[in-house]
Amino acid sequence: MALESKCSVDPVITKMAQVAASCGCDTTVRQDDAMKPQCGYGELGLCCRICIQGPAAINPFGGEPNQGICGAKDYTIVARNIIRMAAAGAAAHSDHGRHLVHTLHSVAEGKTTAYRIKDVKKLRKVAQKLGLRRGRQVTLYSPRRSPSWRSRTSRRRATRPPGS
Image (cartoon, rainbow, N blue to C red; front, side):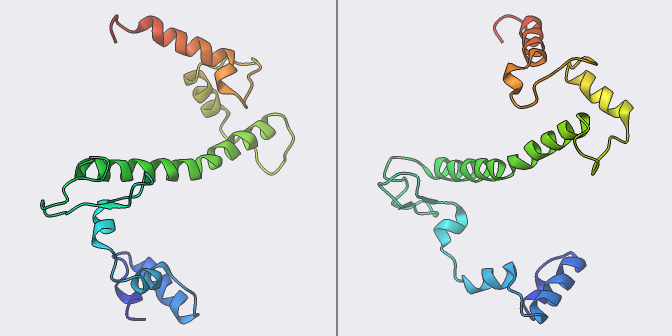
């Protein structure tokens, strides 16, 4: 219970962690503590496992080795790791947006009664910003093939100054 008492600055999260611990539920706080001590290279983001030549761990204090097997410096390895984590996180959650589009499509076609459009004015305003015209049939599954997508991008291209 001592771990859960200092797990967050948010008192609600601390309380929930304490309740979970008292019920015998595993928490991220306990899992993190069980993995101590963690690798200093990994904690700093200086461990590279991108290619099959590695893993490469460079010295975080400026000594040798100061670059990975492929020649990547510390800032390159950290940047690669951050970009890969961000891309993986975004890809893992992109299905939520797709689910929302399918739900909105079902609502628009009257195929579901579980949801309804509460603010029609707001919906029309968003549609206008997206370049969609009222009463026009748009394919929701492939935005690149949608006529409205083509017209928006061609308008943007036409208004860009030369050389941009």
